[in-house]
Each structure stands twice: as C-alpha cells, then as structure tokens.
Image 1 (tube, rainbow, N blue to C red):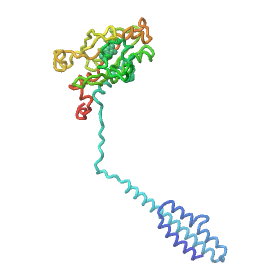
Image 2: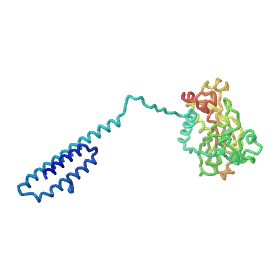
Image 3: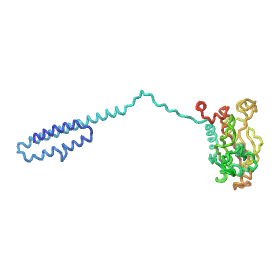
Image 4: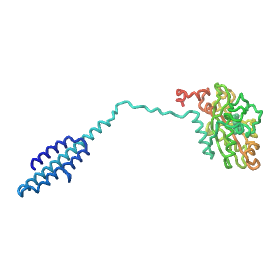
Length: 341
Ligand code: DAH
C-alpha cells in the first residue's frame, strides 16, 4: 500500500505539473481524489491491514491527499496567472501605431438650403411630401389646366417614355399639388421638394435635371394676402429681416391670378450689381391662387375652398445664397468645391 501511495504521489504530481488548463486540472482532481478515484481505491484495501498498521497508513493517506490538493491548488494559481499573461500579450494594443483617420463628409450646399426651407415650413405646420418623378401627362399637364397645345408639352422640351405622350419625366413639381388634393384631407398645407427634368442643354444656368420646391395651402378663406405674408416671412428667414420682395403679375395656367416674386438684391440692396445682373432684383419663384378649374378637377368646391401655390428652383436659391456662379458645380460634386461650404 505504501508503494501504491508513493506511486500515486509521483504520478499525480507529474500530471498536475504538466496540466495546461483549469478543466484538465479538475479532471485530475476527480481522477486522484474523487469518490471513485485512485486514492479511494487504495484506501479500500485498509481492511486487510493489521490494527497497528491502519493508523499509520491512514496518516500517510491524509498526508498524500493534502499534498495532491496542495499541488492542484498551486497549479491552478499558476495557470490563472499564465492565462492572464497570455491574454495581455494577445490583446496588447500598440498605441504608438498611426490610426486610420475617419473622414467625415458634410452636407451638400443645396441640401443645406433645402433643410433650412423645410425647417421654416415645418415650423408653420406644413407637411413635407414626396411624389413620383415618372409621371402621367394627366398630372403633369392636364389636371393643372395646361392645354394640349401648350409649348411645355412639346417633345423638344419634355422627356416622354411613350409614343402616345402619356408618361413622362415630370417637368415641374406642380403635379404634387394634384396628388395632394386627391389624397389628403382638407385643409392642406404641404411643400414638395424634388427633381424635375427638361430637355435643356447643360450650361452655367441650365441642366436637364434640377430641383424645385412646390408649396400649397388649401383652406377656407385663403387669399393672396396669405400667400404674400407666408412668402415674405420665408424670405426674411432665409435672407435676413427686412429683405424686400415684390410680386409681379405673370401667367401660369394653374393659378389665377398668378405672379412672380422677386427679392431685392441682398448683395447691392437694389442698386444693381453682378449678382442681380444690374437689375437690383432677383427672381425667386412663381406663385398664385390655385385656379378654380384645378380645384374642382380634384373634387374640391372652389366656392367653399381656395388656396395658394408656389414653385421655386432650388439650385438657383443655393447659388444665390452661396454665391455660386455656375450651376454645373452643384452637380459635379467635386470635393474641392463641396469642401468650401
Ligand atoms: N411649375 C412652375 C414652373 O415650373 C412654377 C410655379 C408657378 C409653381 C406658379 C406654382 C405656381 O405652384 O403657382 O415654372
């Protein structure tokens, strides 16, 4: 028995020292000291011993158990330390290595202006709506009271998809007026920004694709005074308090009366300069009172309801605000240009 215990002592200590993980160590503990372990197996032979030998062996067995337990505990501590050291080495970060610089882009100047306008109208209780760029001629023209012979319907001006000229790329955001009147509850207060398309050659002031913002209010008792007051307020928010506007009579098929709004040049105060091309005024938008025919075509009684609408070019506005001289710069998206804003 003594030899067996000596054998167990040697083999267990060797195995424990060679052990490489906490799990293995636990398995060794069970193997040597567990209820069905090797030490227990040896102790089962105690019955065969004489009465004098038994306490001696018992003591030896206790000593052995204590030794194996001690060895297990010591190895456990060592393994814990080794694992921590390994983890520290594996996860070491070299803080002296140069980092990867994150380049954060920023908003396009035109979208700055758009967001500014959206904020102003949201503050006045307007909804911002979105609609199709591929549109029916019915909505782009007919329901807006634009007659069949109107020049803007010409194939040389408009991108049509079909020979029958029924489907097209919208030439203006005004069809959004119709969509809103057909789908919304009254009263209506909307702005509808978006892309529009016309067959124009690219130059400093033209592009076959550009952006407009449509605005419309329909309610009981709406007058031209509401249109002027609202637009004056928007202009003052964008160009500063006291900015002077003027409303010139004009013609649009879908509004009656119609007008164009100019702002007094914010650069020269109306004296005439390169920004306003010597005019003292800058044309900003077209507007008017929604034509009774357009209202009734959308199922709204023009005797009960009235409304105003406007449409403005967004690029033009951004060019004015940021003193951008060429429309092409807005679309080319050269970062050297964009970074200036
Ligand atoms: N849609 C017109 C255009 O593209 C602009 C316009 C004028 C819109 C008068 C309106 C309006 O809503 O009332 O030239």
